[in-house]
Image 1 (cartoon, one colour):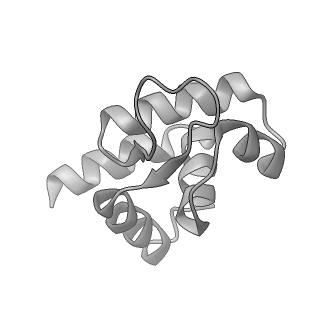
Image 2 (cartoon, one colour):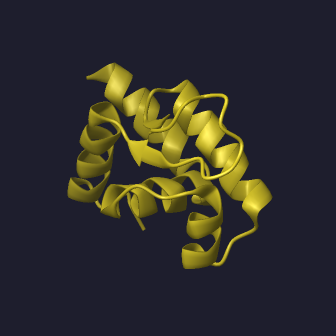
Length: 92
């Protein structure tokens, strides 16, 4: 369980990570879709996606070498973390 709490602490320490994880919990999206849907700069979205990906909370759903139309989705671990954050009222 402490691994989950480490992940939750990591996510909630950044509003951008929380926002990106919330958006991907609704369904797969490209960085520009996330930026537009959530009204945040694409640079913040890209950084949050990279950081969440390093923790295995989100994943690239298209080939790594693709530059345009990079679609991201939430992983099973990401879904578990998101559900726990919601149940603890940590996903504001």
